[in-house]
Length: 330
Image (cartoon, rainbow, N blue to C red; front, side, top):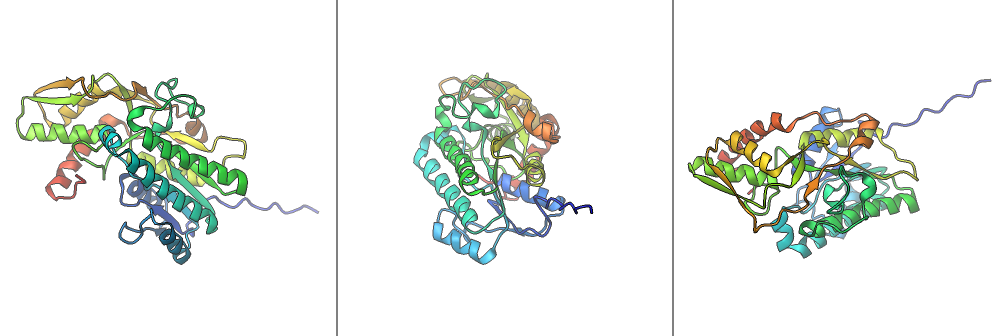
């Protein structure tokens, strides 16, 4: 008599109640779009006024009421070099509260699967390039974003600890620098690409003769369109189940970098700025090179599809439309 083979249940199903924490942010909104494109429409979301993720009892009450089965934690306090330098306690405290409240409550509430969204800033400043996942905690962090990085490392390790001790199915993805719809264009507290877009747009509108950028322009950076990140998150939720002795987090990026000087020149072209670009070398450069090794995710079957050159012009155009409609996050 042949014994029936019990089918392996899928890691994610359309019946799942998927809570996307941080759904209004750039990453969270892209993850929601990707889930819906793939047929996962049973999404749970909550605005900041509806749910303060820094309030532990409030998070517990929300989980008890809405009963999510899958959680994607994309909520975080984010910002560029100046924001990290100016508000170190905020970056550490706020992110630790959000992560602990959501991850612990998800585990205690019986959530079946959780995806934590980290950041490539977790890696040492002088990590061997391209950066493999094994580089984590092998050297000093980049000081200009160390507080945010420490919080994100704590989130990764909390997910690992809960899997090791309690069998909680928590995975993490580490995206490189993101760009695209919903970005923060604050002149000093944003990341490098949106800050450049705003600066060059304003200069082009004013017919300015020069634009001054921070640092030397020599650092090398990698940029991932946020819609690619959304697709990567859905792919990981559907297909990636690491074993107990395997790495519990994966890099997400393009595997291609360019210098900040080259980026500035491309943004100048995209915005129509025709003046001179100068460099304020009194400002910090940050990590000299940051390019992720994305081979693990590629070996699982996922690669980024959207080239920076293809989407930069449309990102600038979208910024201008949103700016005219007072929809830009400033």
